[in-house]
Image (tube, rainbow, N blue to C red; front, side):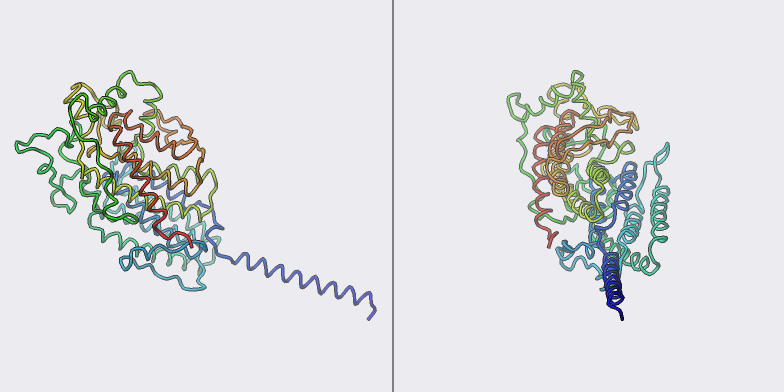
Length: 484
């Protein structure tokens, strides 16, 4: 063979080897199965549906909504953790209480398909018996379940075109098996399961019923100054007095209780009286445009008008993963941490509320300062003015949820993260114009302050709530074994 021909043949063989190696490398790359390779689309759209449903879910605020998010987020995390190499399963944290199925080795999972199945399964279960406000553009229970089925089918149709049938089946089976295990564990929490069916604590047949009148009224049946009692617009009952007994994920029994409030006093020179005066002098006809805007922007108190205050944190999270185009791994990490934290914020806050039983500013101000005064909060659904939420004041739920969530969001997206909150840009019933923040902490501080502007909380309620939320957030991030 001529030297030139031999030389060309060797070059040709070398090129074939290079091409083969490149192809093998590409095949290995395409066969990788990491959660981070996918977009956040499935998480983002299911979160948006949850926010829509939460608006009209009677009895789902303030505790049952975060509780549902905690199990949904935990399921998403445990489904995806086999494809998240730097993360641990956290299911062993609760010992034999929760047993997650094991994923068979070499069984390929399409993570978005598994998550799609999980969200549909769990939402159908959590909202199975929920009462919805219904009518006039509000969702009914039947419409909620139809929307769940429609979103599931939309994603399933998209994925079935792209993924082979065996991988789809594996994914659906895996998503369903993990979700079923977590749902069955959730049902064993007797104080949390279906607590939304007795939100105002007026059904003695329910396990979460609490005979508050025995403790909160004097022997003649009258209100005791300083002790919480229903306000004139909230009738005969208080919301979720036994919510403090609901299962937590990252805090102990002793960590549910926040620091003690300022002692009650009607002495005009006392610290407690000063707290009430601050509310009275702030929430009135002369308050500034900015103060009223802040008060309404963060409210989220009214069923049928907006999503609930704790799920406002999910709405912020969703805005950011959309803006950042966060991958699926970061989004799954986020919904797990945020969901678990929101649950524990709510349980601890309500444990503290019903332990201290501090009355609302409305009761004190009308009794001691001005009987004609009313808080700013208006129910735009039924037209009632001067609304105060139907549970004790101290600590503030808004401040607890917001203060703690700021720490969780910083952990996910970084400190000093600037963002525009356009959660209520489409609302016309109040000033929902987007507000700009230079950090999650500054937004949380404004959220807490808004409750004084609205006239429904003392400043001490807000300060204690922020502190409690931050302590719990630290536990969620540091006491659960998220990273390897």
